[in-house]
Length: 358
Image 1 (cartoon, rainbow, N blue to C red):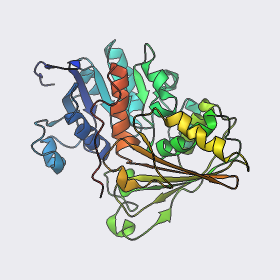
Image 2 (image 1 turned 120 degrees about the vertical axis):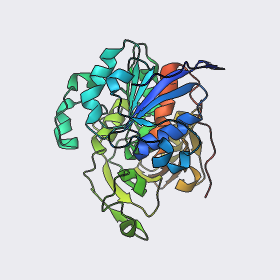
Image 3 (image 1 turned 90 degrees about the vertical axis):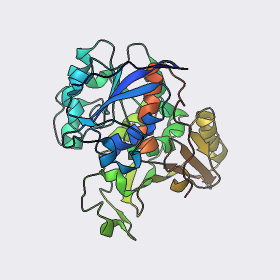
């Protein structure tokens, strides 16, 4: 592992040293884009199993912005010389490596962007992800990293060193239902349709992300059996919903990035105002949640960590629309937000940026 220079201080104090494990996929790419502009951290290494050249050669939009090159450094070694290690590797990698990383240094923290530590029940991993969890005892030690929906307290708690970043569909869906669960008003089974762009399937080409398959097309996939459903229901139960169940249908849309969730819940006639107020109460002070008239749209949040929320209630029904960038608030943006919380930085540091708008 090559030596790195001393990291200068900033107005936020000494710059924290962070490394990214798995930098060739969309998650690692977007994470680096956010971190290059972050005033309180220095990215010391970014690893790859397949690449060895300059980051800009693989991610052309980062050319000239970083002199980093991909390395084959092992995560356990990076833990010894960094303050935090991000795992942006495929599902299954962090589950095997994170315990050793945390044991290699008494102070290093980990933010994992995969699903490896999201579920608290280790017995559910074979059915949900297709493999038994190799370190299930660590699941209870991981904070679930959706700050706006109860995660903040766990992340800032003394001793927290491992944060499980939420899934992209899960983030948007939980954001659409958490206020009702918290207010004790989620008493029926909601219906959720979540439409994602092609980048949600990762950088490796597949039939589902191939341009001719996505262009001018719209389709559902994994209806009522997506792997994020247990994660969503777990979060709603933690918020106070009793035995929550959702009818969840993910769809692929003909766009590159973004998630648009439409959630419909029967709340009973006469409860419309109280249900809408639950959202105001839950999110009024959240720096990344923006209320919009009628319905949220993905282009307004592309490239950002913002969450746009629209709430409409009529005749005993509630329709909540949520728009996020699946690579931003659905992945890298939230990971940086969680890092800020772990380091005791202002939560919005490096994250308050406007989207492109088109």
